[in-house]
Length: 348
Ligand SMILES: NC(=O)c1ccc[n+]([C@@H]2O[C@H](COP(=O)([O-])OP(=O)(O)OC[C@H]3O[C@@H](n4cnc5c(N)ncnc54)[C@H](O)[C@@H]3O)[C@@H](O)[C@H]2O)c1
Image (cartoon, rainbow, N blue to C red; front, side, top):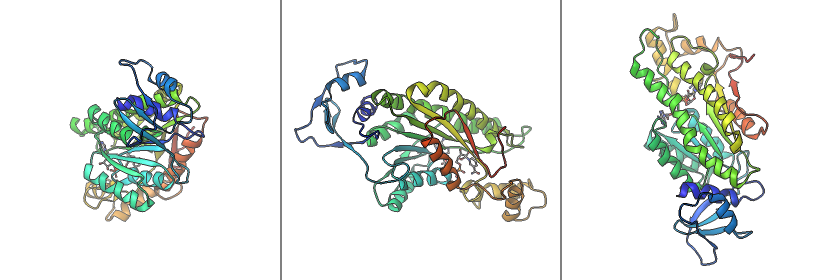
């Protein structure tokens, strides 16, 4: 029930084009009591009809009392509620930390439940306020996503921005890659993105119905491998190309719900654990498998890949954030895939 009512209420309590965070509070007896008839077909319409002008706290019969809280933290994401998947480490963690530093409330979600709870605590310590929560989720499973999104709505009242970042990589030749690895990559990168959007789309649509002038964002962290093929890495590249197809299709469909859908396609992020983890990272894997001819150290592998980039360096999270804030702030663009590759991939 919360998931249908709180986003609608959040939209109706919008002030100055900013949606509030909804916080569960003890009633003090002054709140108007809103009551939805059983089987109510149009929650937004019914709540709008009953909501007194200027209300900032309300009791919803059977649900509880909620206060609209407008954040005081300044920044490019001020007052927005963001959900970042795959946020226990790497790009996801750093994106979530940046959003919090820029004034957002952030749900960090990850299959690594312990890791993401630690990551959220770190975000809170670094930004000096209780901006973040950690949420356990497997983006490849519908029920898990539904539970995670319900937790986000219960905590913040709704959502302004989904960053669909969770992703995995199993490199390997088409002649050798196992079906198990193919399914694993596809289930997280392709199906997981589809299901993540499916889980949040109704919430964003309700908010837009309640506050029709306002728009929301879905941003997939795709890859340069979603724009150009990747040798002996077909499962990953295919899942990322598929992600662009989903992005364009969702953009066409969700525009009527006030949702922009875009993708960011970063180049290689050497500083993150995907590459740098000393035991399991890609530097280790590529060195051990002899993928880079003559390479004897991680540095040799890195130099080999950097030499393919016109700007001769890897991608960093600040590079990605510039694209992310552009996409959020740009009111007149949807369905795009923005390369952030130092010139390695150029669009026609
Ligand atoms: N690292 C790069 O060079 C690079 C380059 C371009 C794009 N990307 C993309 O950026 C995104 C993040 O990559 P990264 O380098 O930070 O990876 P990473 O491996 O460091 O982090 C990925 C996170 O996703 C989580 N995760 C994995 N499966 C999940 C699932 N089923 N449900 C929820 N969480 C799950 C992991 O636990 C981990 O915390 C991915 O989509 C990746 O394809 C990475």
